[in-house]
Length: 256
Ligand code: ADP
Ligand code: MG
Image (tube, rainbow, N blue to C red; front, side, top):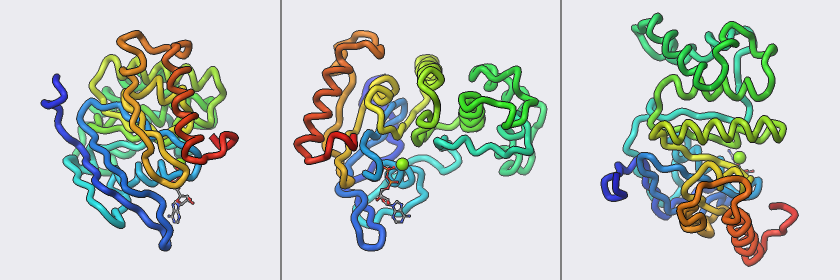
């Protein structure tokens, strides 16, 4: 599909958000199209989650405009905290939302679909387990499965892997990349981790400490067609450019 043919899902223009008179997001211009893999990269407190909430329609703009061309039900959220109900099994947790919102639901079909998604995220053998029987990585897999079960047009991920240990985080990043490769899922990923943004996004919006987008990086411009890996020279180059950008913006590096 060419760029011109991609359907626009969300368009923000000169978006601003204020909380109690304090500007948290300023002059945000962003267009999200079908199939995009976007990362919002910046230090803690710069407004990334706030922007994700705006994209999800959970927050109204204080200034500027947000146009949305998809329904709230077509979006799914995954948070850092997997938020599973401890008294429900994995299967019950992930099928709960469709069962709550759908008046009539074909349970057999739903469970079949749930099983196939659990297989996809590597949790097929845990469907009857309770959350306290799962590792942190497995809980996050269950949260991903829950988000994918409704076949969202747009998956919003707010630091989903931040609480995981390094090997588990890397495995989940690789699994999400595999899902990207095998589907046209549109994702917006909030992260403070450069490597994660590089691995999981095509476009990286780098934030200032005070809620502005300093620059949009196109990963393809750095990789020139080469396969992206953690060892890519392109990653070092982009890391260095982002650091320079933040230095110029006056952000203390030890906060980055
Ligand atoms: P990030 O996700 O980049 O860490 P957030 O979007 O959570 O940042 O927050 C950006 C800023 O807005 C922070 O200073 C935070 O304290 C403030 N903030 C976030 N939500 C609210 C709210 N509901 N009311 C007041 N201030 C808020
Ligand atoms: Mg946040």
